[in-house]
Length: 258
Image (cartoon, rainbow, N blue to C red; front, top):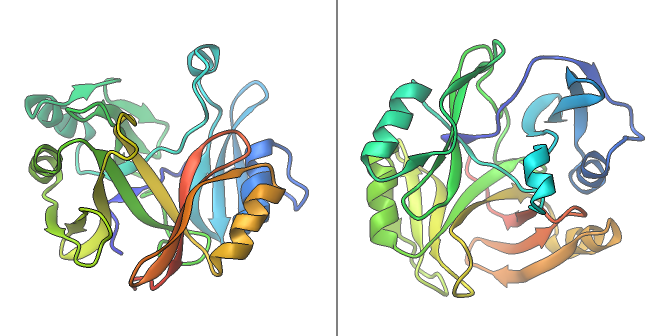
């Protein structure tokens, strides 16, 4: 996968040691084999890069206090790499989306903005400077897919196609209607209908694993839970789970694109 959707990286800090402090860091270290690099972002607060084989795969950051106060669960965010965060924000609003934040600099690493598509699904755009984001994808422990839950395939494909130049095609053999998203000719995500009905539109990240049943057992052992699956597809077995703090993500055990 040549993924336009990346998890933002930050500046270097200190590598964490095997016994990891923090619920999220401990959960993903044990489940996906992540190692960490912490960067201070305030008093007793850190932005943490997650790595597999020394390469950035994701990041963990403190949840904003306003979200905590409002009872919002922890969640994963999908970032889309763009040439200009400001220009993309402007274009998104012209296409019917909205800006949750204005564009802002993240130290020297890059510039970003938080957006909502016309149905309310949040996503981030990332204008890289010193850091592109995920340096490893389509490998065990790393990001391998991004999936949008949408009430309208036509409206979502029109919005994201116009905004990012993505193309879309029906996925043959899917047990439900499904669109595959391609960027520069390579598949990197999909769009699925809202199921169960009423679930809010959202983006879901998938991480690649080897052997889905033992991984699901490990999720439960670490305090998480299974929301769906395992589900058999022609090329993989997948599942959707929650981590120990309630953040949902997908697991993918199958064929990976180079």
